[in-house]
Length: 115
Length: 110
Image (tube, rainbow over all chains, first blue to last red):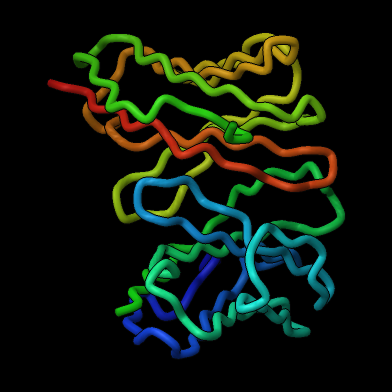
């Protein structure tokens, strides 16, 4: 079992550009959550996808959007990149339906640098 | 006020000592509480979860929860240099939203 995998691992983009990050959940997991972790801070919840729909969303602008595919993999898209979007982006997966289930499986993250 | 607050540290303890990490939260509707360990440049790793008041022990780790005081802590006994990391407290409400603290950096000195 490969666990949660994310791609790419590192990315450098220019202000104003758009970026797409990808996540494949752990086998058997159908719920994917995305987090942004700025340097020196804890992960901040962006949104969660379940059954190909956005189920919950944190306090992030509409520039942040996502998608979940029928195989449960997910993408995070960020438009009009700002310098402040530079962060580690984490994907987490878990079985759906249990709201209290712990977020136990994180991918290795994508380090996005906006210059 | 942040929803989940932790002392940023750094917290430094000698090898073999007990490390005590603290976390307070503001949402009284919170039901699930988690501690994660995060090594520099790596993703968070779940080490403990606690759901009811009292203590929960797992090896060298003990989580303590006091819902009335809105306080959760993590004790690490017999601290080892390999325990040096940032420890994140996370809180989840019944609605399933997870909120993380900014973490406490722990250094265990040999």
